[in-house]
Length: 316
Image (cartoon, rainbow, N blue to C red; front, side):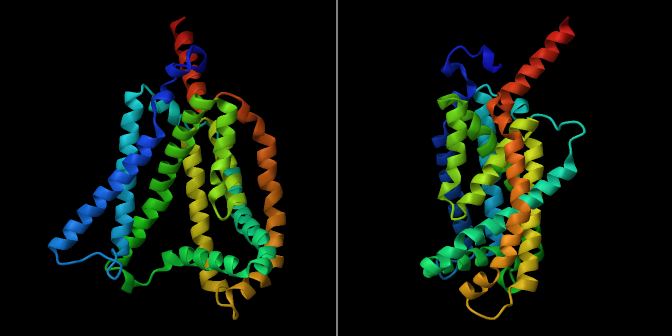
């Protein structure tokens, strides 16, 4: 089925996908897995509460298990709705410029780091307590991968499971659910233009909303332009890897300055302005150069139309 073959909105297979069902499955599956772990812990004499939380290895496995189950359920819902997964995923383009993709991932990460610090620098003088809380929370999240062995009973397995989730499972989950399903579903409901606008406005709830909006636009452009979800998954995995290297490097070499959190944050403004000046032209230039691709058909219908054309040509 191509977009031109759809006579009525209800004929669009993505109109049969309900996002509230996906959200409901997520809540139900999460609750069910939690009770499974709690029951296992109860039989072994372990009470899970605020004083005795789950081991971090269990948390990592919990997230992986939940994500895989949700992907399986959404895949089944797509098949029932008549959605061809192969058109949604697409193919890896031949002779794809992978090296520039690595450069774009690096520029995107540097831009995200610098724009966050440049934006919050003036706010650190206006609402210092608010900015300090964000910095502390962000630092705690960034250093979570450097957990000491005493925090989990099997550190090596924790590192392995966290790496698999961060660099493989989560990029697949995000690309499939948010970039593929969500974008096509909203386009079926509101049309391409409104869907794309709503899609870009979604990250505004993030504390680093400028970076989140830019990243969302880049992800959408990569998916629509390449018509391949695999390109986007590789791009997101590259960004996760660069983020991980940055977090380890920053914690090891740069996070030992003397002074309060705000003082250290303010003292690094020159370096952040330099990073912003180097990365912003690359990131903004990519968006400006490729913005027009978002005006064309979405990947599912473009891939379906190409497959039908190849089939018709082979028949003649």
